[in-house]
Length: 283
Length: 283
Image 1 (cartoon, rainbow over the protein chains, first blue to last red):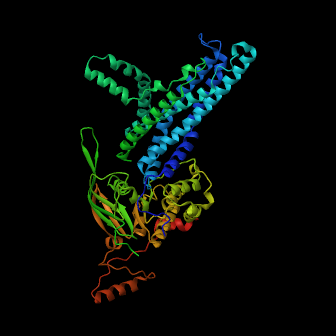
Image 2 (cartoon, rainbow over the protein chains, first blue to last red):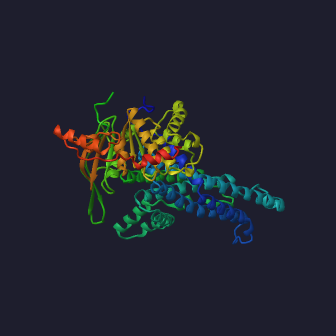
Image 3 (cartoon, chains in turn cyan, blue):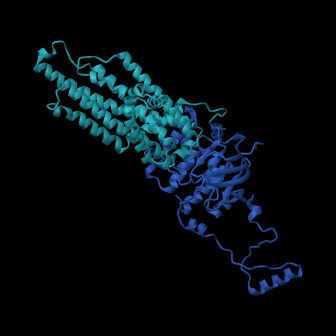
């Protein structure tokens, strides 16, 4: 008697979750994850030693900017390297051969990988932002004791905003992971995928220039091309809402929700393209 | 009871690979027609580059055919449903090194949809069946080649498939491990499973297979029952105790008087692998 009933095999979130869990387990056991996490945490922790070099902005703002700078830099590196590595380790070690010979959809494989990487980056963001919040809280408490008048209206830092910014960065890394998976789905080498990943990261960060420029391009075709560029590549500057932290101004919740939706839209579309590309890949 | 539908049906299969950007193609499989009946142990033989692995990958849906049709139990091989009844052990398998043997088999069982109430019992059963109960808690990264083959067989069997595809199951394995693998294949045959096996070790294939097909440069050269292909129907061998020369001469005369001819007098030889197995303790 067969232990598996067979008629049709629908798309399964359970199998997707299994692949995601396995991807997560593999990622956190890699030295790269620990190394980048250590560097990021170290850099965030060191922010308090550089507070004399605050370039005119408030000390708390400087610590927040420094922390988010570390999150963005190491998070981007971790996202690109981990996504490419986890995908190609399956292909090169031929574990994909065994896995894809099972009754699973390739969409489950791709989105399982994406979800696994997303979870790993989530842990990274949570730890880094958690440390940043602890540091800011501790320093702000010291400053409140030292100069109570400056904090007469209560705490300056709105800690909920730090969580919002951290979450938006996490979603941005999810978009980046989807892009890297799309490249990996047709690329033959890990190196090409990593280089392309960094290349696209730069484009996405500078994409807002194209968005601004299309209004000023005279040629209709040129304007359309620039506008198309602005649609094809997600605008990563939208996710950067950290400027208002430490300035007393809060983050607009509706805006944060719109940015999150924008990010998930791109994750879905780019992930779908990765599935389409991977469907025809010969393993 | 045997199913009227063939376990594997290959009709006019052609597989081309593009080998240059100009579109030059290499024909890996050339108009292959094969049918593997349910319950058979079928050997697919051929030198390197003969198209064996490509054919297997098409059967498993890992590659798409350029032309032709491949069905597994009547279901086109590209469909996910076709893989529900198939277990696959790849050549020189490499599994997730950080998982224990039990975790690995459990992972694949869940991917294959083995239901939770039977999961533990089924995982224990196949691990015991391949003789790895004592090493099930060890990480796969510490396994020997022979153990990897056996855990690979366990993951291939965990969902109780009707067809098991074994790609070079004894490659790189010592004679003891090879003999054990052959024993497991015989047990599978006794359970009524269909087994498709490729191997360079022709003596082993001969021992376990009912039928074989020999491929060369993608073409089917010969196909048939092993007994038909290797047996010499116009000859017979009599194994007797050593005869003194005068008795041998008398036997020769006796045979010639009846119109028969003594073609050869040889000393029967044991096979070297059998001598090896007789002197090496099995695990």
